[in-house]
Amino acid sequence: MKIQKDEFTYKMSKTGEPEIHIKNIVESFQMSIENRSINVHIYKNFDSDQMLLHADWTKFKLVMFNLIQNSIKYNYNRGDIVFIMKINNL
Image (cartoon, rainbow, N blue to C red; front, side, top):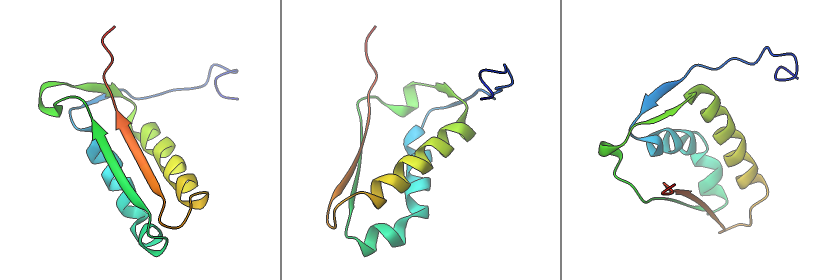
């Protein structure tokens, strides 16, 4: 709705380690993950030290929080949650 009203705002910032943001969010669900014996895997195809990523990390964390929460809720016991961060050559 905010996008339609042109009220949507965001704050861009840089990070070289987006996987740290994902790991921090995953840690907040650690008890649920362990109770259901879910495996979490994070893969990336780039070196974080050599690349800066620009994003609104507050909104990124909110989206990831919702994705992880739903991944746990709708996953099988002893299932997997896999994150793949990939840089495509354009």
